[in-house]
Length: 380
Image (cartoon, rainbow, N blue to C red; front, top):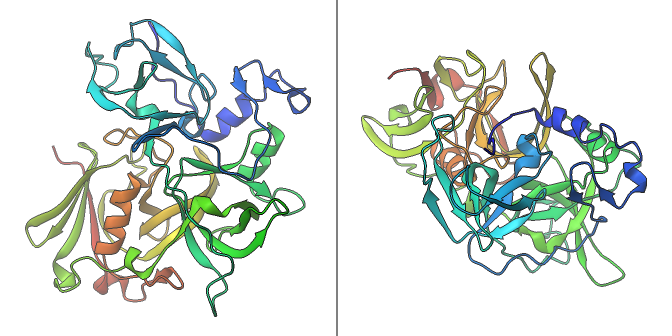
């Protein structure tokens, strides 16, 4: 039987990827994990031609295959394995189907049909390939703009002399290509044209602990506009808005009075108590932020965490977009409330206080009374 889960932390995966392969930096192939090595490229690759795509996102969730996942002949863990899909491999997402045989060890029974077979849906980040016509210069009078990745992934080329963040240091140490993924939002503060004529964006992080500087293919990024942050239902009395996160059901509801206006599945903290119960006013909201921590059981360093609504200022716990799994409805986080990017963005726009495109960050001084309250419950 093919086992579907053996979760490790992102840092553990990156360390594991280096075990026994000290000569990896000199080798064109990671033979231990059977992951094809690709030299860094500034150009967005050719992705499958389909409206809906799925990216193997297990290099982020870090499973026992070190970024590879099985493609099965049927939506069944006991069926024949066709082959292993490698890190960040992108597939045409034909349709989603239910498992042929219920596996009680895995509550998520959804599989994605591809041209080669079936992949368990938590392994694939839903995405699209929508390249953009890049800007030639920064907008007039601006020192930068927010850019959203609209392709499955874009390669990053380090611009600073040596890595600053733990995330980038790990990628360099273990010869892993640094990338941004579909829906992530970053700050773009410079533009250049390469010798080959490719327009490249200088990718930075405006908020959070200091990160690294990169260049990337500008066609991968869509500049955000004011419409992306325009408030939803702004005429509703802010005092009637509240968010309810249910830990038992792994769901989130947005309420206006007693009327539920939005519902989605989420992923909260894996450890008991890591997502704090109780009533929490929204204290800060950021379009994008670098998140990092180095505490017992919670060592991580993640760039471009988008549509972040912080509800516990002391711990930094927040509702935010997640691109590292597609298993919403099951616990996954260190304490934050993971959402699909489109859900996190809707919640960001609907909740109070409203955030402007510039600067894309707001700490609410009257958060005890003037912001949307988040209620974390464990009701059945």
